[in-house]
Length: 370
Ligand code: MRU
Image 1 (cartoon, protein in one colour):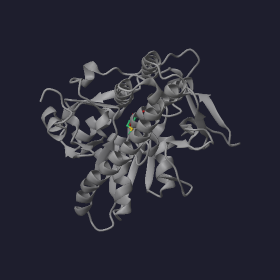
Image 2 (cartoon, rainbow, N blue to C red):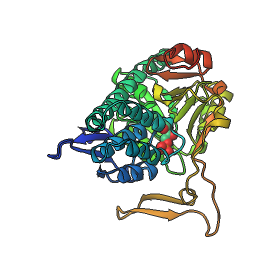
Image 3 (cartoon, protein in one colour):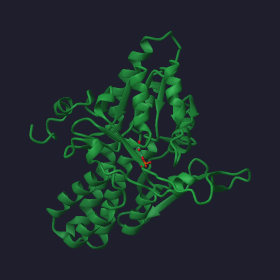
Image 4 (cartoon, rainbow, N blue to C red):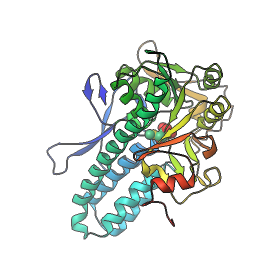
């Protein structure tokens, strides 16, 4: 997608005169106020970038980890370093399954090769993971567009389809397109009027800082709302559908996503608002059934709750404290929306019910034991 009219991806390999170039990312901690691009040159830099959320969003975390493996293979392609890299990168963030998916994918392929061939193959596979992500998200957009088109058809001409989204499941969370935003971008391209309600998404404000920024860059009409406003808007008939992303969806169809997603799903159910989840298939964890009990939920620092970052009147990015000295904070970063609250899963293969049978029917080649 574009920033100031220039096409960007969230991660890319750039020619720097060296044999394999350098991996670069947008350091998302400073958006929307500052566009900082950083090179990641060694495994430690990749681990920091994922753990400290320079990059974030399940698909992008996976793609970043894949390049982290490649960079390590260029330095030492031994079995020992391959395993150690899997461990070091895997422990950075526990919830998004795309991280483990990408690390498993890389290790399985590279193990079959002699060490001297691993670096080249690793870079090629990491590039491919990025291309696959872009294509999956493009297709998610096509399938989601059909849903938006149906809703638009029930409205008066010119009346926008009002879509609520939570967190940032936009292009910065993926390599390109986004998951939840891809149908929105494709609806806009198809000339369907849309209006997006963007949950701010405390504590880290991915909605306010990233989703609002990218929609703004692409001229998509939107309003930023506080996290607690969604229920009210739904109750008053101001939301036609919800589309969110996910960090891990179980074989049963339970959806783990940014904290607060569950409350939006409850409000949507209570008000008859369709609640869709957009996901590329690497986000499905076929080894887990019950998401509430089995998915590890990342607990982040309480300082993300007690403090907030923004731009001051002088244009400086500053962090301020919002709670009293001495107040403790809990900061679970994700929650699980049970499958029965989900209207449909928008995947690269099409839209299906959030149920074990529907998921297995959509992915018969992936679902184990069927
Ligand atoms: O903590 P984050 O910012 O990495 O969380 C991101 C989300 O929860 C996204 O909604 C999810 O990864 C889907 S991204 C396409």
